[in-house]
Image (tube, rainbow, N blue to C red; front, side, top):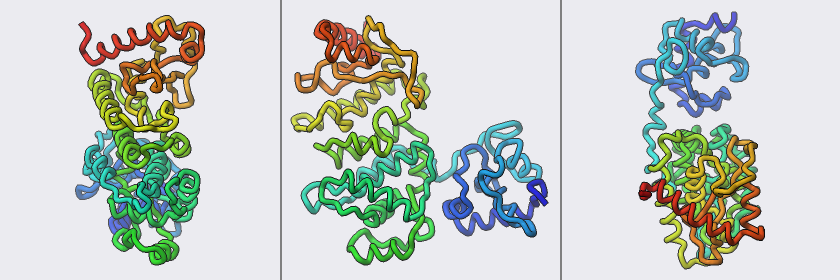
Length: 405
């Protein structure tokens, strides 16, 4: 017996187990990732078609469930075989209709996620916010951006987050992971599927440690949080700004963001449809940059030029505006190469340095190729180049904002 021998009854048995365990536990138990294209629809509910097919194989006499890497879930494979058995499969591909979004994702909006993050309750025992929760959240955000497994074993989570807290915790945080995971779970951002209703409150010490040590819970970002952060660059940016602007003010968090893969160039700038981005997106990003600039005015921040708290929205706006090209009108060094992520090799720089009165605003920032950036930084003609850039960048900014004549 093989894959083509899977029966209608075996599929129903797999669906029953899915319903009994819940989606998260079912997928984690058999090692499948959430479906992206094809969904089996049964009695009005959507199921991950590849996972259902693979598990159904294990309900055949004498056979085991299929491994996720052992077969294809595509239109000509598992999806087709499920349709041949009389099931409805929605998704992309021949004879398949477009799938509706899973309820879990549609139930969490951009604004709702930003609100959840902004309301985190963190310890301030030493007068400054503890960084356990923010660091844990940023680590999980980086994993979502890269499409890595949402749920991990407790030992994997503990080892990864502990190392980050040891390197980047600067407010006396002990390198413990049980507290932030419990707190994020209570906040609705973290899922521990097999123990969701039994997670203790994020208070105390020994009891909380014993619970995590004894249960070793598999966990990660809740499914709607993970999917929204994975799929929507605008949401990633907004959540990043809330976390950095609330908990990392006055800190140089560039090393942490590079460690978790969330520095500006990692944020997925190329995924948004340029036709949608243009003026509206540029204006939105400029508004965010202005709000950040106003909130930081008068504060003394070390290594301010490289501080992503101040630059995330402004840098993204400038990169959108540049359309992948160096913004120096007389550029002679635009490279043809791109980064590993397929992005142009451009550096967003303040035309007038912050220390000399420059602003964290797209109207006074430019995207420059490595050659023009070197000239602007240390070339003998840098002062003349600065004057040209100020005029041309202001004109370009006004045009994008719809203010040009």
